[in-house]
Structure formats: C-alpha cells, structure tokens
Amino acid sequence: MANKLKVATTSLAGCFGCHMSFLDLDERLLALIEVAEFDRSPLTDIEHCHPCDIGLIEGGVCNSENVHVLREFRKNCKILVAVGACAINGGLPALRNHIPLEDCLLEAYRDGIGVENPQIPNDPELPLLLDKVRPIHEVVKVDYFLPGCPPSADVFWAFLTALLEGREPSLPYDLVHYD
Amino acid sequence: MASLTIDGQRIEFSAGQTIIEAATAAGVYIPHLCHNPSYTPHGSCKLCTVNVNGRNCSACTFPAAEGQTVLNNTEQLKQDRRKITQMLFVEGNHLCPSCEKSGNCQLQAVGYQLNMLDNHFPHFYPHRAVDASHPDILIDHNRCIFCNLCVRASREKDGKNVFGISGRGINKRLIINSATGELKDSDIDVNDSAVHICPTGAILIKHTAYQAPIGQRIYDHHSIGEEALEQEHGK
Image (cartoon, rainbow over all chains, first blue to last red; front, side):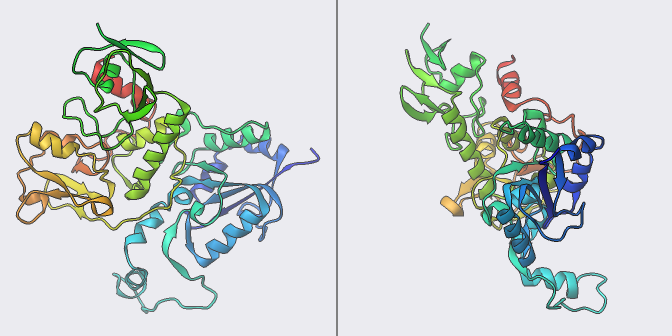
C-alpha cells in the first residue's frame, strides 16, 4: 500500500499499560501494519515526531518534558487521541494533586521510610515537575478520547478501523469503561 | 385516566405523580442520580431534565399534568445531561480505577449510558478528606456529589439525623452529626438505609470491596437504564 496511515504513540505520565493493551491486538497487529506504519513511538525508538495522521497519547502531563512532547505531537498529528484514564483525567498520578509538590518530593526522597542518601534530585537534565498533574485536554486540543484503565485492545481496534474506513469512530456500551 | 406523551408515546398517570414517576411506571427511563422513588424528591442533580411543553424542568419534581408534551430522549437533552455529568466528575475527584465502587457506581453508569468519553471541563482537583474513623463504614468526600440521598435516608427511613449538607457553591460539603464531626461518634449503623443508598463511592461498607469480578458487576454489560427500570418498576 503506497500511502500508509502514519501513527505516532507516546506515554507521558502513564505506566505503559495502555501500550501493553494496544499490543493485545495480537494477530490483528499484522492486519494493522498492512495499512499503517509507526512513526515516533516506544515501539520504533524514533525520537521525534514527523507529520502523522494519528497521535495516540497515553498518560497525563506531570512535568515540563510531558508538555514539550505533547505539543510536538499536537503540531505533527492531524488527529490527536487521549488514550486511557490518565490522559483523560490525570488518573492515579493525579492523586498527588492535593499534596503540595515540596511535600511529595520530601516524602519520596528525604523523609520516607527506607530512603538512603536522602537528597532531592536536581540534575539539570531532569524535567521539572508541574505543581499538579493535568489531563492532556487542558494543555492542547484533543480530537478523540478512548477511556479505560487501560482501554481494551477492542477499543483501539474499533477506533482505528473506523478511521481507516473513513467512518466517524464511536464506542458501543460494552467498550466504554473508566476502569 | 389522565395522560401525557413522552417522545410521542402516550403515557397514563394518576393524580399526584411526578413526570419521572409516570415515566417509570410506564417503563420509560429518564436518567437520574439524586432521585430515588423511596424518598422525597430533591431536584438537585438536574440529570432528569426533560422538556415539558417547550420548557426544561426536572422530571423528579415536576408534576405530571393532562396533555403535557414531554421530550426525554432527544440529542439535545442527551448532550445537556452529558455536560451535567462531566461537571459532576470535574467538581470532585472521581478516579474510577482506584475506586472500589467501580462497576457498581451509578455516577459512572450514567456516564456510560450517555456515552461520555471525557470530562471536557478543566478539573478542580479539590482537596477533600476521607473519614475512616468508623469500624464498618468509610466516607470518601472526594466522591460526594451532594445528591442528599444519605441525608434523606437517615431522616426519613432510619429515623436518625446523621448527615447534612453544609455550605454553598464550591464550599458545599457533606457533614456528619456528631460531637467530633467524625462518623464513629455518630448514631450510624452499618445496616442503616443511609449507608446503602449512596449512588457513588462516597459511602462504602468496609471489608466488602471487590467481591464481584470485572465482567460480573452491575453495570459491566447492562446500562443503568435497564437496571433502574428493573429495580424501580420491576420490568
């Protein structure tokens, strides 16, 4: 196929569970790569996004690097998709949102049980944490949302096949879950 | 017998019934969260908004009347209800993957029923407490939607007065009637109706979590519309 659909994926403040669920497409992945190819993605190791048709974003936004990556995806992807609970509402990382950031860092790196050589990591290469974890639609325009923790492989399949066939994607009752 | 129409369907009702009571009796589902047929209507969640003769009103409080033209299942009302549900989600901290009510939660189920795929609005992430003081019952204020059902159940059925809603707007909160404000010092008992009425995961019974596996929970395969009609009307 001459013009394959270009797909990019990334995990921001996520656990890669959505990517693992994507791989649950199993043998359907073979059908998918007949019509689609991957650009920037943990599956390809391509480091930066080129112009793409679809960008799948797992995870919310918890640090400055997440913001840069998300904006790179939005700039390059015709269709940007929030994948999973964390991208949609912050998810479990957002449980820190009612705790001041300084308290989080002190608990994790200085005062917590079993901490050795206590110090707050401050290497200049480390991205700075945001004060709150945010869902991606609060930073960029998002075109579609695939809820679930994670969304099942059937959700990815229903969504991608609809786009490939030129239909408006929709999820039936059994594919809509927030957990 | 007097009658009205809902989405063109003729429905009979008896004097004194509200629109939602007439609809439920006729097997028509109108989405709702703060309404429960066993308790005095409250009219606060606004999910049951229907259009009556051209005006929007709450079906749980609005009296049925002869010849009313009621619209319920329209695309516009579905969109309005979805927005209302999204506002309920962003006002609290509704993180379903870490909530033991997930799969059996009416708030979540209404989201499913409305095909709500995102929360649309900016999240408040309010700072709310958990009251785990009671040996059998847990209150997680993060998930309270102020439906008032526990307040009504405690007063109307349990003959107690354990719960109240205090404050207004963004400062609104569920309060507990005890000297310390903690649940353990209140009159509540695990068998009270107020403990079992919560439509979200705000009031939980301890030691009962995750008994039904995913796939066998109330709303995994059946929409809240089917379940509500079955429970409230026996259909």
